[in-house]
Image (tube, rainbow, N blue to C red; front, side):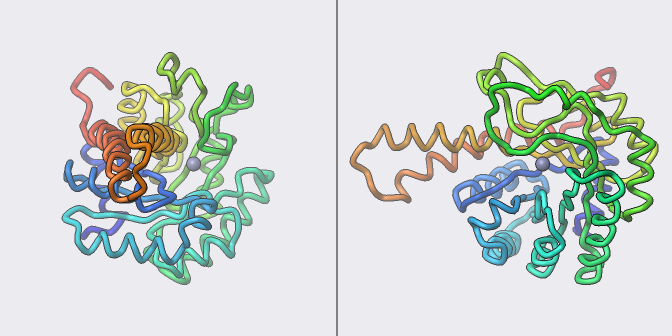
Length: 294
Ligand SMILES: [Zn+2]
């Protein structure tokens, strides 16, 4: 079986994780699909509400379905950060494999009740769809930030995670474990890295027993990724790193050919540059750590 649940279980046994990459256009989608095919590992395509608004929710689902039919590796589609029941239902009806239900900005009790209601609604449309819930603050915006916010030190606790999972019925949990959306300028330059609380990941995993997603993976060091996956992370989200590669390569491509106006001559360079980022992350997420590294 190649459904999302069984692929996540299969990867977990191997101490590997599923790479999740956000797309806002066909250029980035082609890069993600090509990287997964080259390395021969499953992949998850993600789109936030903003990305879905730009792409078209059903149009993206149709394109991914078409790529999937021609693919030798499983390709899944996730409705990233969905802030309303209506948008979650829309994605479920369009055929998405998973929905990130994000009411994390609400007080805990309200987050629980809204998430539970949305889980029930999307599972009524597709019983095999996986529902992800989010607690804690990992910021918003997969963009470049000038400074870090101090509240990222508020990590999810194993107790609240357990209560949240049991009360909502989510299949996947997105905890706050030192991760944050976006990258600092210093991270883009490569002079700083994000640091994850590996012990906390292991404690939350132990308390809940569900799949875990690491959001805001861009700018995290390779060792932290390996340890986080070994501690229980099943899905890793990468967005900002792709956006940085997309912009840089687009600027380069345009600068190198100032009078070129043919998209299919300018954009392959962008596809290739983004593909390199996706490939290196997919390799890392699916290569089990050597003994002694965990
Ligand atoms: Zn996220």
